[in-house]
Length: 309
Image: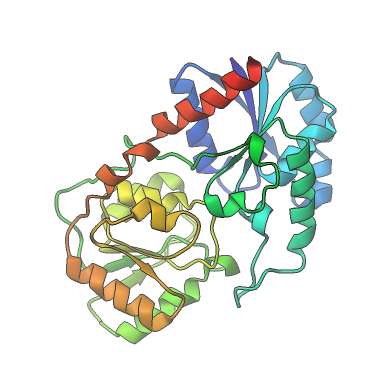
């Protein structure tokens, strides 16, 4: 089976890591995967890619086009290709972008509308979590499949856990990530032995080392689809403090040392202190076995097979 992954290539590091990782996991299962990167931002930036994408599709005998992100799916359909298309919805393409107050931005409604058009013309839709499914009206052709984690890459490096590092890997300039919340919580804790580390940007290859060298990983977003970094922290058995976004509560479950917090900085501060007091590795890796990359790849292949049949 030959599959073309189409996704944005605007990231500093090219194709978004979890998309590349998903492609590699499919290749491990015997699927041929090729990649086409969209260069350009906004609606008009995307439209410039119609002709080169059409040429790329026509020059190879792909069985399925797998588009990642709503606008990418719409672009694939504008190539007038008759190939079946699987569309993976990321999150913000479904529920929009947010400002510093946690309110949906008016400018994101166009993106949400265009995503709905792409959904209509998709052969099958993949959403990352139940909260994204709420924005998809075509339930009969939609499957919930979160991103997987490569357990070979994300794993505990040592038996113990580093002391004193509170890690946040979010982009501080992205209002949706709400990084100021963890900063305010750290001021409330006011403990000189604790240090907030927010090393952005870094390559995805550096994530395992940062996770393994932290006391607790913190996510304070207003909204998420299925944040992969939570599953990656779980795979490294790192204590977690996170707002109840996307599928986080489902992923961490009853894992001791992992905590759900509200958007109140006092609550975040208290949960960070509880995670620090826990002071050891969690059983997160054992509790997310179903998110291992090969398991997720097999679910995606089932969708491909059903479409081809």
